[in-house]
Amino acid sequence: RSKDQGGNTHHSYQHKLHANAEERRLMEFELRNALEREQLHVEYQPVVNADGDNILVGFEALLRWNNPKFGNVSPAKFVPVAEDARLIVPIGDFVLRRACKDAMSWPESTRVAVNISVDQLTSTNFVETVISALHDSGMPAWRLELEVTESIFLRDGTLAVQVLDRLRGLGIKLSLDDFGTGYSSLGYLRNVRFDTIKVDRSFVQGAAKNKAESLAIIRAVVALADSLNIATTAEGVETESELAMIQQLGCKKIQGYYFGRPMVFADSLELFKGPRRNVA
Ligand code: C2E
Ligand code: MG
Ligand code: MG
Ligand code: MG
Image 1 (cartoon, rainbow, N blue to C red):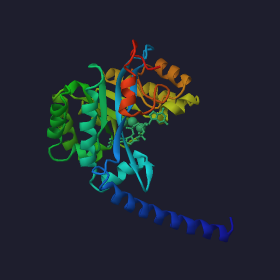
Image 2 (image 1 turned 120 degrees about the vertical axis):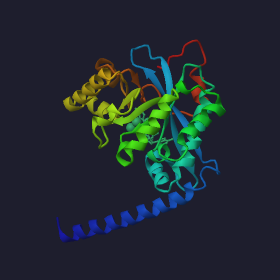
Image 3 (image 1 turned 135 degrees about the horizontal axis):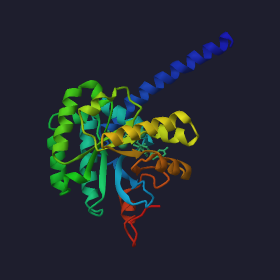
Image 4 (image 1 turned 90 degrees about the horizontal axis):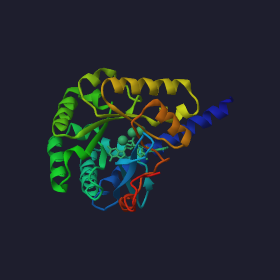
């Protein structure tokens, strides 16, 4: 390419970097008041049994932010900003409390899964916070599932393991989210008893396009989980062929647009009206 093009590329790259840092700064500023301005709400995405009857077993709570300046911002974008600004602890508390409260309006057997950042997990009194959320909502511990990613073992693995142990001791379910995308080894599976491994959507969607590697990885993860007596959930099932493939590979639970997108709480209640509790 010509020197001119190179120069332009360099210039716009710099410009983009600058805009990004500025955007993050502004976003952090707006996030500081997002809770009190009631710009945050929680949506719920169905999780169903994979064995063909499509029984709804629970929901994952997913945080949403609507801001006058930024509009609807993806949590993939603002959660990292909230983490860097140490705002994820109060925001995460809000999600936990809301999810427990809302779950009490669903049938008794329905679980709720809440994503937990490493900063939350290792914050002082996290276990007490969870106990208090359960107590205030009246929800039994076994209906609460906490989702963590492999990244929690990178920073202070010992502390993370201790906290997860205490939570498990309370009867709370533990899930390992986005499995296969992190950097850590399999060794931590010896130290924490997870109830569920969530197979990352990149493998599920890669496999539907007939990628032998994705299929082999999912098969290996399911076999590993089976032998450790851990259930598997496939994330990001969007199509009938992905569903068929996942069922054949033996995943226990399924989550994805095929069965339902994240929805506001009121819409989640609609799923329980009528004679059937099936989603699809
Ligand atoms: P995650 O925990 O892996 O959540 C699953 C994400 O996949 C959600 O994105 C969900 O909407 C999306 N998804 C589900 N099914 C499908 C599908 O069939 N196709 C596609 N393309 N996507 C699907 P979302 O809601 O944008 O959340 C992104 C991430 O933000 C979450 O990934 C989680 O890491 C984080 N996050 C969301 N809420 C919270 C929260 O309350 N606390 C923390 N710490 N992180 C959160
Ligand atoms: Mg999750
Ligand atoms: Mg996930
Ligand atoms: Mg994911």
